[in-house]
Length: 474
Image 1 (cartoon, rainbow, N blue to C red):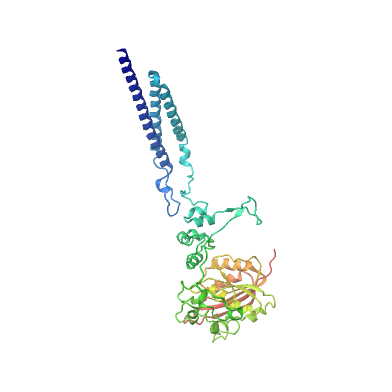
Image 2: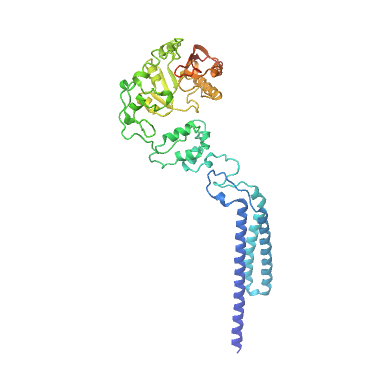
């Protein structure tokens, strides 16, 4: 009988312990859920779900929401945990047999309480802190250009490349600072399309997109790590003895982006295909060959022309003109003619409707793929001659013309010649444009203004000049 009673008492005691254990587990589970809700509420005060998504600009940032509600949740959870801890402490006095379990869980809850209280103490700092996340940006633009773009190749390119040895390199810099044009940020979609390629594979046939970026101010363009496309059946260029005055092989150009699909089409120009300011540039025999050597385009009324001849210009500085730049739209004929006088000319142009750069190179001359937006890649006071035609005309803004002319002045050496060849504009704008050239205080060797007779409208004039840069004190 006694054994049965003792056995029943043991079972009751076990049930009590089981009930206490289940109650403790239930309490811990509820408190864990509460702690999770508090964590979510804390994050929602600093982040938004949208900020974790990739947006178009990476600049969307949602301000903290429900800050008061988050504080209230902190206070409620802390109060409930304290009440539960007090009840557990009281339970240890009544149920000494389960004191170890209760003390352990009491310590566990104390740890949770300490963490939540520390988070509450940091609450004001979290509200004012800068979110350190690569996909979240504040309302103002990030100082890191790489953070603005989605395509990883752009991000890798624009980041500063520190030197591997941790020392200054031979150029005196601690790293390499690769750059892109400021307008690249305004043409984000186009630039990301341009830089979307597989590293080490063949590049897309997108030179026209690249030129669009350059012309609109995304210049310089970033370098790429893909292999440039070439014509499928590239052939050996003609020898220099033939190439100067002979149309190149059509197979040496990629024609996909042009209206004309061969040089004969460009030379005939029956449908005005190509750049309208250089409609006959590919007609080497009849149009190009006489230029700058024989008098052309004489005005019938005044018997004058805006075209100066190379021999008479070189006589201004006998033997002194050796190297120069031709900033024009053309096929390199000016450089070809100057080559006959032992003068090396680099031809700067872009491919406006026709393969001008390929044409210049296939003739055996040096092309420079350069837009008007960019500073000339020459050091100060280095060139003997700078020539321009069919490019800087009455369309150009006066402020832009100032920047261009002063950059040209920078690269011309003292005593160098600036040859303005057939600059045309409206009569009413002529004085303003001429003043822009006079600001340089160059010596006038040649200066002529003649009517532009190729249209019925007599409001336009040609202006040509040969000016010498004066010596200046250091």
